[in-house]
Image 1 (cartoon, one colour):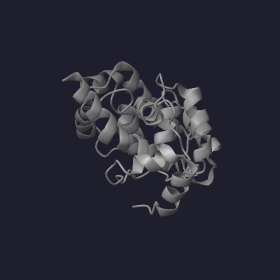
Image 2 (cartoon, one colour):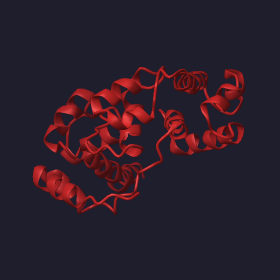
Image 3 (cartoon, helix red, strand yellow):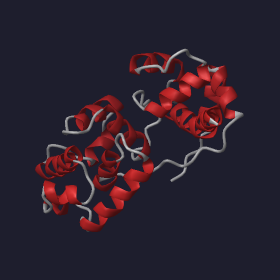
Image 4 (cartoon, helix red, strand yellow):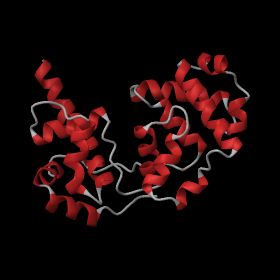
Length: 210
Protein backbone atom coordinates (compact mmCIF):
# COMPACT_ATOMS: atom_id res chain seq x y z
CA UNK A 1 0.00 0.00 0.00
CA UNK A 2 1.54 3.32 -1.02
CA UNK A 3 0.52 6.60 0.57
CA UNK A 4 -0.23 10.00 -0.94
CA UNK A 5 2.04 12.43 0.91
CA UNK A 6 0.93 15.58 -0.91
CA UNK A 7 -0.95 17.26 1.95
CA UNK A 8 1.67 16.31 4.50
CA UNK A 9 4.52 17.61 2.37
CA UNK A 10 2.78 20.94 1.87
CA UNK A 11 2.19 21.19 5.60
CA UNK A 12 5.83 20.50 6.46
CA UNK A 13 7.11 22.94 3.82
CA UNK A 14 5.08 25.70 5.47
CA UNK A 15 5.79 24.62 9.04
CA UNK A 16 9.58 24.41 8.73
CA UNK A 17 11.74 26.10 6.11
CA UNK A 18 14.59 23.65 6.77
CA UNK A 19 12.36 20.74 5.79
CA UNK A 20 11.27 22.68 2.70
CA UNK A 21 14.96 23.00 1.81
CA UNK A 22 15.59 19.30 2.51
CA UNK A 23 12.90 18.35 0.03
CA UNK A 24 14.83 20.11 -2.73
CA UNK A 25 17.89 17.94 -2.02
CA UNK A 26 16.52 14.43 -1.65
CA UNK A 27 15.30 11.74 -3.99
CA UNK A 28 11.69 10.48 -3.82
CA UNK A 29 10.63 8.97 -0.53
CA UNK A 30 10.57 5.17 -0.41
CA UNK A 31 7.46 3.23 0.51
CA UNK A 32 8.16 2.02 4.05
CA UNK A 33 4.86 0.17 4.50
CA UNK A 34 5.21 -3.43 5.73
CA UNK A 35 2.53 -6.02 6.50
CA UNK A 36 1.36 -6.03 10.10
CA UNK A 37 1.83 -9.06 12.33
CA UNK A 38 4.20 -11.21 14.33
CA UNK A 39 6.69 -11.78 11.53
CA UNK A 40 7.33 -8.11 10.83
CA UNK A 41 7.51 -7.20 14.51
CA UNK A 42 10.18 -9.87 14.97
CA UNK A 43 12.02 -8.46 11.98
CA UNK A 44 12.02 -4.99 13.55
CA UNK A 45 13.43 -6.50 16.75
CA UNK A 46 16.22 -8.09 14.70
CA UNK A 47 16.96 -4.66 13.18
CA UNK A 48 17.55 -3.03 16.55
CA UNK A 49 21.02 -1.45 16.79
CA UNK A 50 22.61 -3.33 13.88
CA UNK A 51 23.33 -2.43 10.27
CA UNK A 52 20.72 -3.24 7.65
CA UNK A 53 23.12 -5.72 6.05
CA UNK A 54 23.67 -7.58 9.33
CA UNK A 55 19.96 -7.62 10.09
CA UNK A 56 19.16 -8.97 6.61
CA UNK A 57 21.68 -11.79 6.99
CA UNK A 58 20.32 -12.81 10.39
CA UNK A 59 16.77 -12.56 9.11
CA UNK A 60 17.43 -14.91 6.20
CA UNK A 61 18.71 -17.57 8.59
CA UNK A 62 15.82 -17.05 10.98
CA UNK A 63 13.01 -17.36 8.45
CA UNK A 64 14.61 -20.53 7.11
CA UNK A 65 14.41 -22.01 10.60
CA UNK A 66 10.97 -20.70 11.62
CA UNK A 67 8.61 -21.88 8.92
CA UNK A 68 5.78 -21.07 8.93
CA UNK A 69 6.68 -17.90 10.83
CA UNK A 70 4.23 -18.16 13.70
CA UNK A 71 4.53 -17.66 17.46
CA UNK A 72 3.98 -21.38 17.98
CA UNK A 73 6.76 -22.32 15.59
CA UNK A 74 9.07 -19.75 17.16
CA UNK A 75 8.65 -21.36 20.57
CA UNK A 76 9.63 -24.74 19.17
CA UNK A 77 13.17 -23.36 18.92
CA UNK A 78 15.15 -22.91 22.11
CA UNK A 79 17.14 -19.79 22.85
CA UNK A 80 20.29 -21.73 21.96
CA UNK A 81 18.84 -22.80 18.61
CA UNK A 82 17.91 -19.21 17.80
CA UNK A 83 21.39 -18.04 18.72
CA UNK A 84 22.79 -20.62 16.33
CA UNK A 85 20.87 -18.79 13.58
CA UNK A 86 22.73 -15.57 14.36
CA UNK A 87 20.54 -13.92 16.98
CA UNK A 88 22.27 -12.49 20.01
CA UNK A 89 21.24 -13.76 23.42
CA UNK A 90 18.97 -10.79 24.11
CA UNK A 91 17.19 -10.83 20.77
CA UNK A 92 16.61 -14.56 20.99
CA UNK A 93 14.90 -13.96 24.31
CA UNK A 94 12.94 -11.01 22.95
CA UNK A 95 11.54 -12.97 19.99
CA UNK A 96 10.52 -15.81 22.26
CA UNK A 97 8.97 -13.36 24.76
CA UNK A 98 6.92 -11.78 21.97
CA UNK A 99 5.76 -15.19 20.77
CA UNK A 100 4.81 -16.19 24.30
CA UNK A 101 2.89 -12.96 24.96
CA UNK A 102 0.89 -13.38 21.75
CA UNK A 103 0.05 -17.01 22.47
CA UNK A 104 -0.93 -16.24 26.07
CA UNK A 105 -3.11 -13.32 24.99
CA UNK A 106 -1.05 -10.78 26.91
CA UNK A 107 -0.56 -8.94 23.60
CA UNK A 108 -3.06 -8.83 20.76
CA UNK A 109 -1.54 -7.34 17.62
CA UNK A 110 -5.00 -7.15 16.05
CA UNK A 111 -6.27 -5.02 18.94
CA UNK A 112 -3.64 -2.36 18.24
CA UNK A 113 -5.69 -1.22 15.25
CA UNK A 114 -8.40 0.05 17.59
CA UNK A 115 -6.02 1.88 19.95
CA UNK A 116 -4.71 5.41 19.72
CA UNK A 117 -0.98 5.90 19.33
CA UNK A 118 -0.22 6.22 23.05
CA UNK A 119 -2.23 3.15 24.00
CA UNK A 120 -0.67 1.09 21.20
CA UNK A 121 2.81 2.21 22.26
CA UNK A 122 2.06 1.22 25.84
CA UNK A 123 0.78 -2.22 24.81
CA UNK A 124 3.82 -2.94 22.67
CA UNK A 125 6.39 -1.74 25.18
CA UNK A 126 4.98 -4.08 27.82
CA UNK A 127 6.69 -6.88 25.88
CA UNK A 128 10.22 -7.66 26.99
CA UNK A 129 12.70 -6.25 24.48
CA UNK A 130 10.29 -3.85 22.78
CA UNK A 131 11.21 -0.26 23.57
CA UNK A 132 10.10 3.03 22.15
CA UNK A 133 12.03 2.73 18.86
CA UNK A 134 10.75 -0.76 18.02
CA UNK A 135 7.17 0.16 18.87
CA UNK A 136 7.35 3.34 16.82
CA UNK A 137 8.76 1.61 13.76
CA UNK A 138 5.97 -0.97 13.96
CA UNK A 139 3.28 1.67 14.38
CA UNK A 140 4.19 3.69 11.34
CA UNK A 141 5.56 1.03 8.99
CA UNK A 142 3.04 -1.72 9.75
CA UNK A 143 -0.01 0.19 10.99
CA UNK A 144 0.37 3.35 8.92
CA UNK A 145 0.25 5.79 11.84
CA UNK A 146 1.01 9.29 10.58
CA UNK A 147 2.34 11.12 13.64
CA UNK A 148 5.10 8.84 14.93
CA UNK A 149 8.53 10.29 15.72
CA UNK A 150 11.38 7.83 16.48
CA UNK A 151 13.43 10.39 18.41
CA UNK A 152 16.01 7.85 19.53
CA UNK A 153 16.99 6.85 16.00
CA UNK A 154 20.64 7.77 15.50
CA UNK A 155 20.28 8.43 11.77
CA UNK A 156 17.37 10.80 12.40
CA UNK A 157 19.38 12.60 15.06
CA UNK A 158 22.36 12.99 12.74
CA UNK A 159 20.13 14.17 9.89
CA UNK A 160 18.36 16.76 12.02
CA UNK A 161 21.67 18.00 13.41
CA UNK A 162 22.97 18.48 9.87
CA UNK A 163 19.75 20.03 8.56
CA UNK A 164 19.39 22.46 11.49
CA UNK A 165 23.15 23.11 11.73
CA UNK A 166 23.13 22.18 15.41
CA UNK A 167 26.48 22.14 17.25
CA UNK A 168 25.90 18.64 18.64
CA UNK A 169 23.67 15.70 17.81
CA UNK A 170 20.33 16.19 19.59
CA UNK A 171 19.22 13.71 22.21
CA UNK A 172 15.72 12.30 22.55
CA UNK A 173 14.32 15.20 24.57
CA UNK A 174 15.62 17.80 22.12
CA UNK A 175 14.43 15.72 19.16
CA UNK A 176 10.94 15.62 20.62
CA UNK A 177 10.98 19.37 21.24
CA UNK A 178 12.20 20.19 17.73
CA UNK A 179 9.50 17.98 16.21
CA UNK A 180 6.55 19.64 17.97
CA UNK A 181 5.86 22.05 15.07
CA UNK A 182 5.77 19.08 12.71
CA UNK A 183 2.68 17.53 14.25
CA UNK A 184 0.51 15.84 12.96
CA UNK A 185 2.91 14.73 10.20
CA UNK A 186 5.95 13.61 12.19
CA UNK A 187 6.02 10.19 10.48
CA UNK A 188 6.48 11.93 7.13
CA UNK A 189 9.08 14.26 8.67
CA UNK A 190 11.02 11.20 9.86
CA UNK A 191 10.89 9.70 6.38
CA UNK A 192 12.25 12.94 4.92
CA UNK A 193 15.10 12.92 7.43
CA UNK A 194 16.00 9.28 6.73
CA UNK A 195 16.21 10.09 3.04
CA UNK A 196 18.15 13.28 3.82
CA UNK A 197 20.59 11.22 5.87
CA UNK A 198 21.04 8.77 3.00
CA UNK A 199 21.28 11.35 0.22
CA UNK A 200 23.04 14.27 1.91
CA UNK A 201 24.57 13.51 5.30
CA UNK A 202 26.22 10.19 4.62
CA UNK A 203 27.75 11.19 1.27
CA UNK A 204 29.12 14.41 2.79
CA UNK A 205 30.75 12.51 5.65
CA UNK A 206 32.45 10.22 3.13
CA UNK A 207 33.72 13.23 1.20
CA UNK A 208 35.12 14.75 4.39
CA UNK A 209 37.09 11.60 5.18
CA UNK A 210 38.84 11.49 1.77
